[in-house]
Each structure stands twice: as structure tokens, then as C-alpha cells.
Length: 150
Image 1 (cartoon, rainbow, N blue to C red):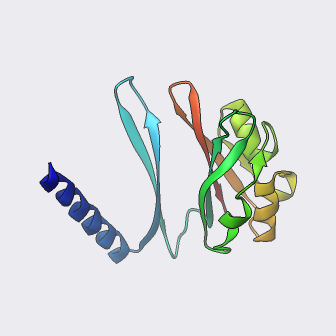
Image 2 (cartoon, rainbow, N blue to C red):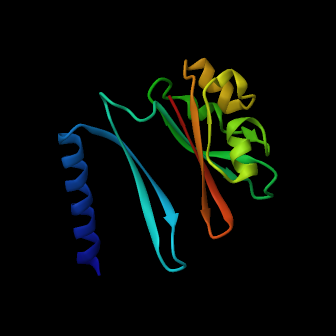
């Protein structure tokens, strides 16, 4: 058992090194449930010269399911943006992220001025004008909303 864990770590390090060598700077893997017993992962890979997004955010339902709360994120423009979201909440149908949560379908907002949420205000402050949000489910349960801004 221990050998398998060590090999997995070595394989991961090798993949990371190879990714850097070919210019991949970031990656985002999103689980996609297919059949009941199978899960695939959709990978989004980003390079320094051709980033797919300049900001990534993960928003998950609060324990009481009354709002989404910030889980994690990465922003190349404002590395400290995650700290501003420590107590942030997004209500159902509030901004693009809330609309995606409420409707259960991906969404895109081309003008961040139209997004009234804390995420939209933060994106505007960073000079980001477009947000794409994608719900991630496990069965019928929403696990997270992934937001990408550019």
C-alpha cells in the first residue's frame, strides 16, 4: 500500500514538471458524473501566454443551504482576493453565480456591471469584464459553482 502512495506522488510530480515544461501554468479539474458508478473529470488547462481565465472561484452551499459561501479561488490580478471573501455569501439568484445555483445551468455574463454579487463587484474592481459559471453536481445535489473570470 505504501509503495502505491509513493508512486502516485512521484507520478504527480512528473506530470507537474512536464506541464510546466510545455507551458501549462494552471489547471482546474471538474468532476462530471456519468453513469451511476462512473465519474469523469473535465480538465481545463491554462498557459501563461493563453490563459483560459484570470480568476477561478469555487462557491459551495452553506450548511443551512441558504447561500453559497466562498470555498477557494485563485486570481492572477489580485492574489489576496480570497481573503475578502471569508464572510461573503451569495443568495440564490444573486448575480451570475447565484443564478447558476438557482437555475442549475451554466451561465455567462459579458458585462460584469450586470452582476450585483460580491463576486461581480470584486471582478469589476480587478478589471475583469466576463464571468462564466458552471454548477457541479453529485447526483441531484449541487456540490459547488465554479466561476471563471476574464
